[in-house]
Length: 242
Length: 242
Image (tube, helix red, strand yellow):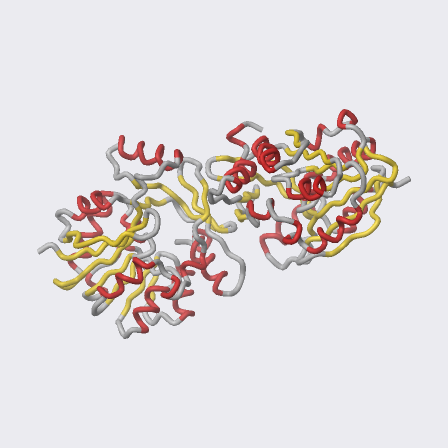
């Protein structure tokens, strides 16, 4: 990620430095929205969604936080004594993590996770970060690799959104086109904008619980349970499929 | 303004209907920001900036509210017994005004204001709406026409921003280029985005007090006083130059 592409990381870094910051999401059909904003990436656990707080009880051992952002989850788990490796594609996000005290934060793509990082007992992908699986094909490849870099009892704790109940025509139309093209319902091609910063286009995946169950099949993982959250968000507890 | 161009109006209408709404500003150099948001367009007078509240004492007689948005100023003045005509380029903004009770709200460009609307004693262009003057040439034309459609004692109460003190490189660079091209410092070519709605590109003008003084010269108006507000905003009281 080149400096001028580091939109969400710069927004976090600016927020950390006390400047007003925002995060704009552009979808490839010309739909623009704003995200909940950098503030969410800094929230202490008291301000997390209940489902995310609840799932913390499943965390054990050595943790990989994929898409660690400004480090809210990494800091929480590190404070509880876990060894945590936080990875994010954004250099500015990782800089923010380090400034905030995350001991092991690395600029790394989810695609590059392998056994060189050691073995993990818990993988966290909260705040919708199951979306980083991208699309069906990419998601399967990543999940298979994650199975190889985790212990037998390992869990993935990940959040996604089921938008299939939405009545918003801009969501319904986009997702209908996905299904007609054989994609998972909530696959979206987006990029993030902040000031003049703009990320490359990337696929971000939202899925129903059933789609997630299907995606996991054959990757070495299976769905243990899901905890519904506000509106369309849910947190999934994913275990090894032995 | 075609329906798919009505970005800020649709954001207002959605906000009025209780939906989450936002307003994204895109500048022609690829700079993206978010505005203060639709909420501001609905604020009751208690929540206005102090300078805007203060200037209300100058309002007299028949009022033209240019760029009336969701009608916050029009509703306030109408409530005080003034006859108010609110105009806005956005059909959805005007619909919002009507739903909120503005008695005379019309879809009309600032360029089309003429004596067919009758004579006004006060013109309000608050919330930064002096920006609708666009650029030096267009601004002079509009001001000259406004002089012809107002009474001898008429005032323009208008707000703008002086951004020349900013240290933000993205503002400094843009404004420096303006000055090198002989433009007023704060002229910006922008468009507004909300969901899939996007306005056409338009010039939005921010000026220093001295630039405003110069712009008025020869248009039939002169600057009487300015009231500084928070950060870069100021409210100008403009009177007839007889």
